[in-house]
Image (cartoon, rainbow, N blue to C red):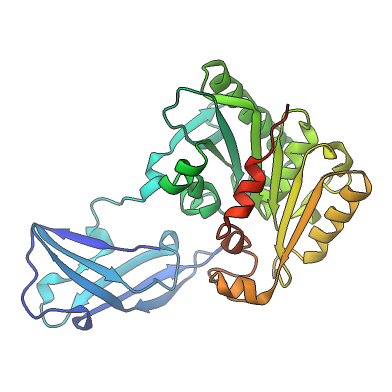
Amino acid sequence: MPVRFTVRGQQLPEGIGPEHFTITGEAAGWGTQATHPFACGVKEVIPEADGWSLVPEQFPDKYFYVRSFTVACEAAPELGFTMADIGETTAGAADLFTLREAENGRIKAWVYRPETEVPLPVVVVFHGYGDTANLLTYRTAVDWAEPEHQAARHCIVIAPTIEDGLYVSDNVRSKVFAQVLAWIDEMAAAGAADPDRIYLMGNSFGGMSSIEMAEQYPDRIAAVMALCPALNYSRTGMAALAKMKDVPLFIAQAERDETIPVSVGRQAAEKLEKAGGNVTLKVFTDAEMEAAGAVHGQEQTYSFHHAELALLENEDYAEWLFSFKRK
């Protein structure tokens, strides 16, 4: 969500406050190009030495779905601007990621690789279906690169991108898994990555991919955190769970997940447990999801399918993941 707009080279007239501004626009939704109108208020207007800033109320739509917007000020029309006037966009920790490509661009990943003098753990984060465009606003990936997380758990982050049309292909996913390990081996050879502390996580299709990769490479993965894993869309994911019985698995899902039934997570946990695996299942209640900012309903920007909202608010889960080492 956009948190601040800054205008350079223009002074804010006296007496102008947030009540004088309106923000309106058009946005699309997940999986569609059809647009709908939206509006949001302004929380704060701040004079600055070389201009002024405007802090909006929370946009009702994620910024990457916004197709156009207009900020208007009836009391001082010269202060108005549109989306087309934006000259630079900054996104905090997301700007620290760089793009890696392989196979002539057919395999891509955003990589956060901090300076280090010792080999670092690697967190591989798989996005959900349809989340390619907004990967670097996807909290499960970027949170690990935030300063407070790095201070507590210094690590490398790899966030592969898989296009919608390719994500459903077992063969494509397997090629991505192999390439991710090749990149990690490259960083390990340079002394930057610890090959014994490779952690996988993801939401929905990303949770499915995390489990599949651990099934294919159980001797390489230290632990897996799968959120709302879409194993009902995987041809082999549920059937091959016994292959990762030696890889600790944490499954997290909301009781009323609108997209992937919680029964899928429960079935996976039960099956792996019967195979002798180390598995933990956390089912978030409605109250826990709502406290984390989720609203029930598949059409909601942050629905109960976003288990990461509740998961990433608790340091215990990150501590669980980083407590494991392969050897």
